[in-house]
Image 1: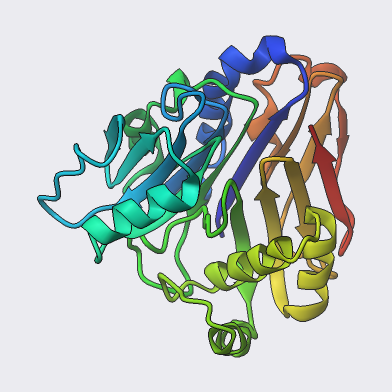
Image 2: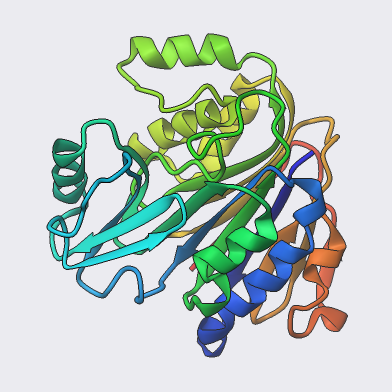
Length: 289
């Protein structure tokens, strides 16, 4: 049992409120996942200044990343390094300097925070409420498939400006992991959700959009799951064909939101007049900017 929340803003007037809205949503799913929490924010120029790329990384103890970028922000287990260079060049700079580090997010618009501990405390550590931007997601984890470590936390961000969060379990993840490894894909954890993220990233790299990538996942993966996937273009949700794991979507002209429980949505502006519905089994729901 894990908790998922996501918010895609259509109204730019709400961009300064993204963090406060997400903090409220995250609070609504704390009880679903007390082990750890992760947050991804798109468009927060505090962490990713315009014209910069950013890398979110779990650094080894006593590492000094101050010379790697023009802006370095530590937030619990995660350090975000930003520099006015390309994403691939910045990732290479960080991993060359710290070969044992784990990159947990990268892109031109994305800041990722991951760590173990109580989600309410981590939200303060990450300063979620202080964020601005146009899209965000968060996950609270109750571990079932792998150890409670920062590497095993969600979201899994394994492609530029891409994230995936997952409630459920994939029963055939080991087989798909081996297939991806034969194709040269490397993994950072034993978490089954990372297999889903690597699969989706490989499809996006081949030119598919989020909807097509998730339709391919639905046809390939067995198990019970609700997934929320984000990219620089938008936001998508899919549940398995049996739809065992909970999800609710709310839409207004100003925003689209998804959560594991309705109570996480109650603080959103205009929720009283929002269109509310439960996503149908096996159907992909996608929104773009």
